[in-house]
Each structure stands twice: as C-alpha cells, then as structure tokens.
Length: 86
Image (cartoon, rainbow, N blue to C red; front, side, top):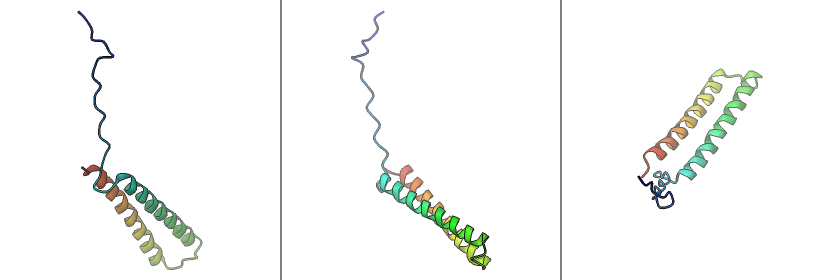
C-alpha cells in the first residue's frame, strides 16, 4: 500500500473573508467608537449622579437608558451586518 506524497496533495482553497452588506471593518470600527462613547457617557452620568451634581433622577435614568439603547442597537447592527452579508 502506497501513501500519497504529502507535497502533491491539494490544499483546500482558503475560505473567503467574511463580507457584510457594508464593509465589516468599517462597521466594526464605528461600532467600537459608538459603544465606547456610550460607556464613557454612562460612566460620567453615573458618577455625577452619585455625587449629586445631577439632582433630577428622571434625567439620569433617561440619559442612561438612551445611551444603553444606542449602544445595544449599534452592537446588534454590527452582528446583523456580519451574519447576513454576502
């Protein structure tokens, strides 16, 4: 029984890079920037609320919720772009 020469075996073609509807690298970079800014703003708002620089609890809750929703929506858009790409 002869074994094939390993140098003559065909290598599998490389898998094509993941593509999204929009360039995934661009979407990933923008998503990182938006999510990072949302985290930064949420942190600042929370610290200001703890130290009573922001006295209206309603304002803190609305700002925090808005930034959380924007961050989550950005993350979801990034995931959808990569999964349903071409």
